[in-house]
Length: 424
Ligand code: PSV
Ligand code: MN
Image (cartoon, rainbow, N blue to C red; front, top):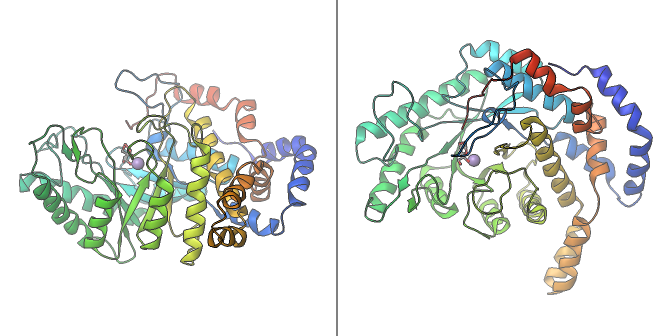
């Protein structure tokens, strides 16, 4: 299903007057509104191919119906999101969940939908049907060289698919670790993992990056071999210039100061990518900004400050992706909400008065420093984000249009009510 340009224009016309009033109000308070809107238009967040169906918990999975049955339909769904918000212009694939059988056709379809291929993701955390050796006790850390070799070869195969699609990065998330004390020798597990990652790193094309994603726990509950940003950074530093750390918001122990982690990784030139979601307790994979919007803003504040300090391009130099699960919401509506939350936090971070903040910090004026940040956080920047969508050709109110056009019902009619998309 597609939403035609004319339908988007009609929708925008009906909301234009109201939008203009709100936009004029906020514009009158901002000096560089045009450049901020341009930065918002340029900022794109990749959608993972595994987030288009309903997510499951270990207790069950409740299909919403109309879920994409193959990679082509996943691309169409992301194309639909991008048509509505103009900020979801990239797709991230997980192999083998989404092997492109015919890469050149898949590439063309993505292009027709305005999408490029973001980071490729390998999977050595599950055994696939027909797989020779099991990952039950880890993959790249495994005590058996043959298992490690299988994991290395899988990653190299993922790179090959990515090259055919025009991607330029590989995200490696390993569930490797241990569930009980004594199960592993930590040092040997680290060294095996490093050696395995090195072999994959050697196979990277010149212009590629390797993003090493860390996670505190789950599915292993005693130790994780890439368990935190320190360990990920160790691997990335030892691997070389093309290796970076990837931060997933859900992968920290409770109350970790993620904004500080982000700042220091940027300082080291080692932040490579980002997975957005939100959580209350652990890796809950909830809608971005639904639980801790202030934290999200503080993270974006450090991202913008740290990227600017290094002269980085906000839109291109990091791999931005949503990594969430949708147990009770329509996945497409959930993704629209997540992208909106990201754009709001990014817009707020762009509005921070950097000079005044530096002055307040240099003068140890703690109260003023807090006020500078909170003034922005309490500013309603939604009209800026909506204006960026309008100028980019998207919809002023994506979820409203999605519902008015009864997209989910159309998808159910087209694909059936019992379809289950690949993923977790
Ligand atoms: C693991 O929890 C993770 O965040 C990794 O990015 C995986 O590749 C993804 O979720 C999908 O399971
Ligand atoms: Mn992730």
